[in-house]
Image (tube, rainbow, N blue to C red; front, top):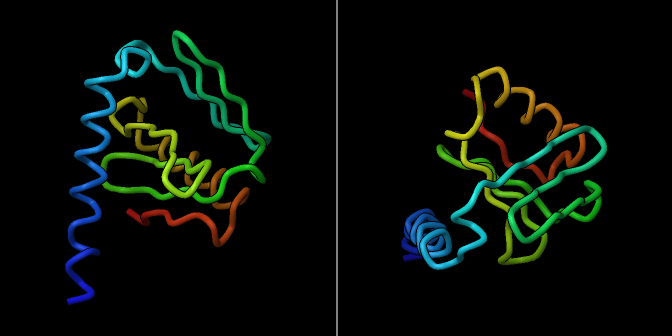
Length: 109
């Protein structure tokens, strides 16, 4: 019985992402992310966010996204399709692992 929520969590996350992108005008526009060893940045039509790594609670990598959590249920979502190469994904993994250590749940392709 405890496995059922774990199976449903990825589906619920994907559904929430799709709904947010569909309903929120800010998220439908062009989004820019900058990930450096110093900070995480997200820029959109109506917002600019710059966060030092110690302000992020965790980062989770799924098959399609990087989720940068700023709260228990609030995350900045970076789609892997927006990245230019597999090397860029590896660079992000290295930066996140160095900055967050055990707070990063990353894939090993």
